[in-house]
Structure formats: C-alpha cells, structure tokens
Image (cartoon, rainbow, N blue to C red; front, side, top):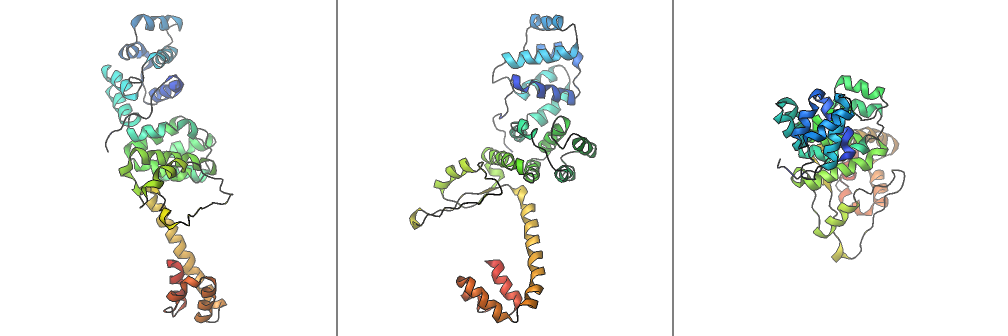
Length: 314
C-alpha cells in the first residue's frame, strides 16, 4: 500500500499518549537527556529540566517531551522523528516498533480517533470478539473487562499493533464497534476516512458523479436507531441517480453471515406456510393481490418453493 501524508501530527495534547507508547515499548527513561538531544532540544534546556526535577528520570522524560511537543514544528512533530531519534541512540528495536506501528499510514487514521474510542464502553460480547478476531490477547481480554470494557492504555496499543500488521483489522474493529449503539457514528467516521485516504482498498458501487460529494459529507450523520430512515426519491427521471456506497472488503464476511441467516429463516418458514395455506394457488393469489408486479413471474411457480424463490429474488 502506498504511503500517505501523516494524518496524526503530535502536539502537547498527545503528551500522555506518547509517554504510554514509550513505556509500552520499554524505553529506558534514564536515557531521557540523550533522547532530548536527538530530538533537537538544546543542552542548556535539558540541564534546566534535570535540575528542576531533581534528576527524576520519569519526570525529566515527561518535561523533555513536553518541551519538544510545544516548540517543534508540524513537519517534525511526527512519529518518524521519534523513531529516528531512537535509532540514533541505537535503540533499534524500539525505533522499528514505533516506525512500523505508530507511523503506519493506516494506523495513523485510527490514532486520530483514540480520544473518542476511549469514551466508548463496549459490551462483553464485543470485547470477546476483539480477542477472537486477534485484536487483543487473552490476558488483555481479562484486563479490558476488569476496567469496565473500555479501550484505554495497553489494550488500545495492542489494537494499533494488530492493525499495523494487518490493515483489514481496521475494518474488523469497526464492525465490532458498530455492535455498540454509542459507537456507530465513530465506526462510520473511521471507515469513511479510510475510504477517502485509500480508495483502492474499498469497493465502490456504481454511482453518478454528482451524488458522490454530497453523500460522503452526509455519511457520518447517522440517525438514532429508533428513528425512521427517510428516503427521498426524485420523480424527474433526468435527475435520478444511484447513491454512492463505499463497502470495505472486510465487511464481506458479515454480509455472508446475513445471507446465511436469511436463507435459514426462509427454509424454516416454508413448512409453516405449507401447513397454514391450503394450496400453492391460494398463496399465489394472495401474493398477486399484495404485489401485482410479481404476477408475471408467479405464472411459472408450481410449488411452495418456487413461490418463495420469486419472493427471495424480489
């Protein structure tokens, strides 16, 4: 996949997140001063931090990063800069992990939504799915449940790692989030941003060009599931078009499951219909009265299964 410009720029509001990432990858805090120098901070500035914090490496690292995040430019405040600084210190393993995971272009899209993800409370079923789908480990599964089923700290970093290794996991994550009512809008925003940034990674249904922009801008505005969905139809044939729908390939399995459930439902319903309706002709008569447009197709239906096939096709 081609690289994209960074979606996720670092600033002082990301200080705690950066600290968690460094801790997660076991950065040696005692080397904070060397780290600061490689980030471009001046030696007198770093010695002042050391003096003010009584040589406490943890606080010194935090103040060092705060200074960098406050004074750096948009061009340098990216994960790649941190990875380069770590590499200069010969901390190759940590540098590689951060470059591979945090600087991954698809992963950076997800990072933009971390604060919103932290506010979502998942169901235990959804947390189990995170483990089943390989987004978190078994030990992390227990930790997430003990913390109220929220994605904060190490669990979120493990999800980021999983997405970096397999970009389809981003769609897996959104499909799990959609199961929680409060996260539907968030999941939609993530997948739509992915679709805009990597259009070749999604399947686009046929559409008219005029509808594309307006549909994309409205896609994140989801109604409450209890309200009715309104569909507006233009009666002017010259102005009609097909609305653009972006479906990530990761959703194909979900659609397959839905189709399987529908098939099972219809299979179970047919015997009930046969027991309740005297004949196939009675069923055909009823359907013709309800759906006159099906009349031509019902002519060749000679069994209950034939009639049900006409209904399925519709």
